[in-house]
Image (cartoon, rainbow, N blue to C red; front, side):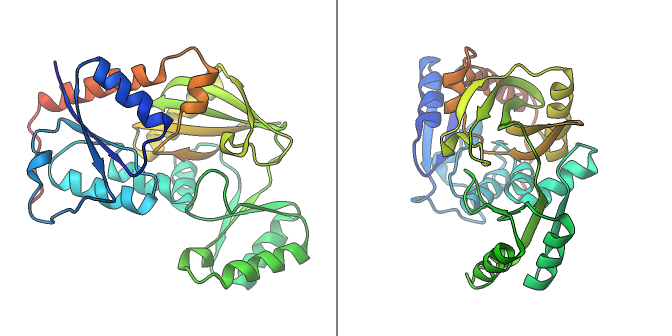
Length: 294
């Protein structure tokens, strides 16, 4: 069955190229939707979208992702990942609350809205601890705070940046991991492939230059990946885990997961597995009537 698949994007990276190549090899028809050039009508779907079986959200910017997925769902066009999942994963506070509610081990976290209360939270954790932006990726704007002087300087800096998100202080315990963390790409809770990201730096993101090696999820990791996926609504996700003396802890779930580094580290054809899933999703949606919300 030939599918009509829309790809939401603002830049075509290696991840999107892998997906596009796989889709075209299977003779699916692809509509590339550059959100920077697209307008969305609140009352009527553009004709170009009428025949789409499913839309894949690969937006770089969180704000565009959240709004665009709302429109496609309103048009009655299935989106992966869903807007509900995107809303939870895009905000670290919502992400942490969802994991905690689902009973998934996750680092101790406090949120404050003033410099004074944020400093109290930091002092309660002790040094070092970690200050993160509530929205962000690739390990940007994260700070490991080693002293009260550093805490006061960083909090002052964030408070004067202007944007309201910088005045939401997300403070987290510092997890003593063994120089690495783990990324597992999963589809509706089932692990597709995993990698260990190792670095001498405390931030072990692949985007920060971490060395990557294959990770085979054990029973504990597999169970946590499934629970973390369910906690945010499922879909194509990147679940990040850290190893502790008490087992794994899940510190984040990513909804527009990048997999190029993982694809290079493992033998699994990640793009092929994702397209298999998209074909299944489209078949499911084709067998049931989709209700339009207008």
